[in-house]
Each structure stands twice: as C-alpha cells, then as structure tokens.
Length: 439
Ligand code: ADP
Ligand code: ASP
Ligand code: MG
Image (tube, rainbow, N blue to C red):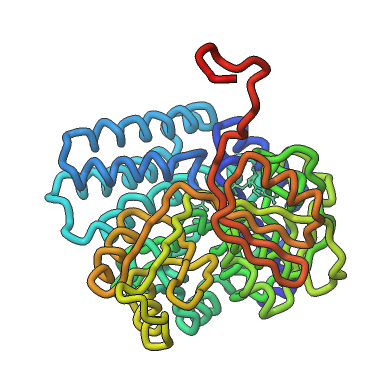
C-alpha cells in the first residue's frame, strides 16, 4: 500500500450546502496529486432527518414519504447549485432514493434496528456521490468507493461491530489498487455491511471511526478530521466560554476525554490509530491553514483542566430489598443484566446495601432493566442528569461548575473528578420578606 496515503474525514457541518461543498473542494485542491482517501458524512443534519423517516415508517403514520421528499428536495437544491442539468450524478442520487422508496412501500420490517440501518445509511451514499462528482468536476480525479464492500460488521444493526480480519483483507484487495492508480478515493463514513450484504451502521457520529478503520487498513501516514472548531479544545465551546485549544494530545488523553462526552471525536476512533501509531490531526475547515491539534504518542502529560459533559444520563440507585449486603453474587447478576440490556456504565459506586450506577439514558433500555431486576432489588431511577468529567482539575474550576447544580454522585482519582449532577436553581434571600411572613 502507498506509504504516504493520508486519510481525510469531512463531517456533516463541512458539507452542509453547495457553498460548503465548494469550500471542501478548494481545501482539497491543495492536495491534488497526493494519495488521499476521503471519508464523508451525510450532508448537514440529513441523518437526523432520515431517523424521522425510519420512525414514521415504523409507526405507519403516513408521514414517511413526505419526510423523505423534504430530504430529496434538500439534496436536489445542492445538486442544482453545483451541476448542470443532465449531469450523471442526478441518476445516481435518484436511484438511491428509489431504493428507499421501495423500503417505504413495504410493511415495516419487524426488526426495527435492521430497518433503521437500511434507511438511515443512505445519507452517506447520497453525499458521497455528490462530493465525488463535484471533485471530478473541478478537475480532481476521484474514484467512488462503496464502504460496504470493505467494512464488514456483525449483524448488530445500529451498532455494527467491525470484523477486522475480513475488513483488512477487503481493503488490501480493493482499496490498494485504487490508491495505486493515483487520484483520490472517496467513500462513506458510518456504514458497513454484514457477511450477507445487509447494510449496517456503526453508531451515531461513526464517520470518524470509519476514517480510523480505513487509516488502519491502508497504514495511513496520518488521518485528519476537518471540523468547525480550531482543534480539540479544553471544553465544548457551545457550552463553555474561555476555552483553549490543545496543540498536542496523547492518544490516552484523547480516548479518556472523548469516551466521557467530548463530542469532537467519536471515542472509537482512537484505538485503531494508536495500534499503528498513526497521528490524528483535528483541523478547522473554516481556517484550514491553522495548525489544529495533533493526537499521537508524542505528547507530554501536562494539560490544563479539560471538561467533558455527557448529557442524558440516568442514575440508578439499586439496593437489596431485605437489607442484606450487596455481595459479589448480586453484582455479578447486575452486571450480567447491564450487559444484556447494552447499557453503557459511565460511573458507579457501591456501599454495604446499595449500588449506584450512572448510565446513558437510551430509549426504554433503562426502564426495561429496572423492570427486570425489580423482584430482587429496589431501584430508584433519576433521569435528565449530566455527567461532568474534569481531567487535571483545579479547585476553582470545580467550584464554578458546581454552581447551581445538585451533586448526586462524585468520584475523585489522580487529578480527575467525575460528578453526576442535576440542575438546582440557586436560592437567593429576598431583599424584603413577602407580606404575611412572620418577621
Ligand atoms: P462533524 O461535522 O464532524 O459531525 P461534530 O459537530 O460532530 O462534527 O463535532 C464538532 C463539534 O464538537 C464542535 O462544533 C463542538 O461544538 C463540539 N465539541 C465538543 N467538545 C469539544 C471539544 N473538547 N473541543 C472541540 N469541539 C468540541
Ligand atoms: N451521519 C452520521 C451521523 O450523523 C455519521 C456521522 O456524521 O459521523 O450520526
Ligand atoms: Mg458529527
């Protein structure tokens, strides 16, 4: 495989409309002639819109086709701004929509997750055809690659697990000759397929992970994800002011902060890169000449406080019904149930008679779990919580974050703090008591 291949990933925000796609084209002009594998997400918020189509189809509420028509119109608007009438890309996009219309004409498949993947995966197929055609039009030879021919997963729909041996073999057989032929190769993020050729998705926001899988398979020299931020920052700028850009990060630091909610990179992205020491650059598509953040082995471990916030958390307080200790056999049973329900544990603590666990509140999984164990255990579920993870904390940062929050669970270990919190309006003494109060 060409040693100097670089892998680039462009997310939905960088492809949100025709102008954004033109801009991506202009960034890529600087790499003309290089060995480049490009991974693209769906345009803008298409995946959210497709989720609504899948939901409507499952409910048979008569809205699915209308919702799909809106997505179609948005894609035609982008194409009309980029391509002359009759361009070949129209037929490719049209065929992709027709496939979904066939799905919508049939009864909803009993396996919701399977049906979801067949519908939601088209976002990336559409965007990849459009971006590929645009690059060809501006004189950048680009070959379109179907990621489903390369990325093999198990049949856990909506959360496909990569089958690495087959994936590496497919990439060696198909992607290697494509890269050797020269020009760019462009493919879809987020999607793969089972051994029976059914489309799967890798989990929401999974395009970063796709780029890492390809980087691993082609022994990339580096991988770059192009974002709407200057690099990895000390916290999400949408939630916090006065954040700093981190110039360098270790893989370990990156994996810890993304696992606990730093949404800038999908947490699964780091491992394949770390395994082959492939540096990951996070750069701004708005300011492409900026240095961004480099994530690699070569970073020291001195960092400023870094804050990650995971929303949509639930705290389960589980206790024995008869006041007996929460012993090993209880824990073993509880963990087995947690694994069966595919709950993701973010924090836990146990005492003599109780076990507290903070998990992502996903659909009805938490309630089904509580229902399942209720004969043996008393369970209290508290929803709508946030999990703060503060790495390399200073007391004053903690002080600031705690303001207006009720702390439900806290844990400190070697410079890091995690806390599960709930909004609590700050009480302020009235300047004048209300009439009727005794003093
Ligand atoms: P993509 O277009 O690739 O899907 P995302 O929207 O998923 O991009 O990710 C970029 C966003 O991640 C930023 O706009 C920012 O709000 C958010 N973000 C969360 N945590 C951080 C962080 N620590 N540093 C930078 N950005 C962050
Ligand atoms: N389009 C998919 C999503 O929005 C994958 C991605 O963008 O990373 O979840
Ligand atoms: Mg994203």
